[in-house]
Image (cartoon, helix red, strand yellow):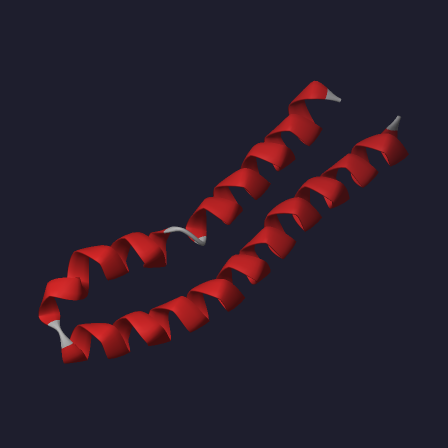
Amino acid sequence: MAEETGLLAVGAGLAVGLAGIGAGIGEKDVGAAAVGAITEDRSMFGKCIVLIVLPETIVIFGLVIAFMILFTM
């Protein structure tokens, strides 16, 4: 029973951690492009904010998977 709980915790940690790393890599590229677009045209600010927020949804999905692993297994 203790080994199963430990492996579930490792799986939940991997789900959140790897999702966070992937979102960080994606957000790096989108953020750099957004800053460049905003410096050229300030009216692009709203669109750029939406594009910057999109990679963060991946972390939320990872967190949901982690909760499903921990609380339903």
